[in-house]
Length: 226
Ligand SMILES: C[S@@+](CC[C@H](N)C(=O)[O-])C[C@H]1O[C@@H](n2cnc3c(N)ncnc32)[C@H](O)[C@@H]1O
Image 1 (tube, helix red, strand yellow):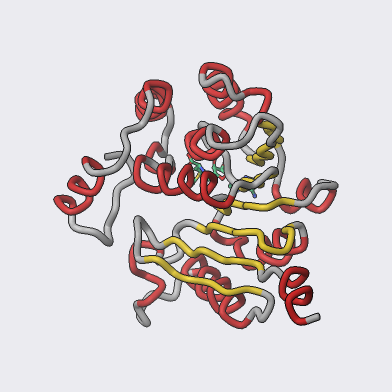
Image 2: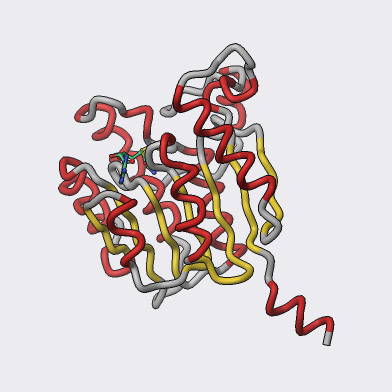
């Protein structure tokens, strides 16, 4: 178990992990190195969320994926491994210290051609990215989730899917007595999504709370209506 989960009983989480398709050796090695060499190894998404991301890529079949928050590359590899040969994952992180490790494991997993790593701040780099995406994973700093939402949605193709981690924030999001800045920003993000008429969404009480947002396929719906 890597990401410490405060919402789900440890025995239940362990059982879920042992009944989930296991990680490959590269991901195991990446997890070990992250635990040994980084200050906050619990940031790594881990087995269950990682496998969920792989499964979603297998189901949604995106051509282009956007990730905000690379860290040492675990979730990027989980998604890129299910991309088609000509697919591309663009992942952004503002910490230059993660670059060597992330690139090492992208290469080791044989996925370096499918992954473009941008070292920079999301708010400075994303607006200039001249691409549209079929899937996105938002996992950078929670404080900016409300700022990231419109930027990401603008770059999503109709029918695209956005996954967002840490939406329950150790349960603080639903606790009226918790009003620190990050908790307030996550609530603000959740309200933005809930009020957005261009999407349907489901908040899953999985890991630290995972929001799945689907940008309605307007083109397909309007074709249906004609
Ligand atoms: C939770 S970790 C990402 C974990 C990764 N997705 C995984 O599953 O292994 C969050 C990452 O976001 C990065 N980050 C934080 N603020 C950022 C910003 N403003 N722009 C870009 N990256 C940022 C951090 O450096 C950190 O590596």
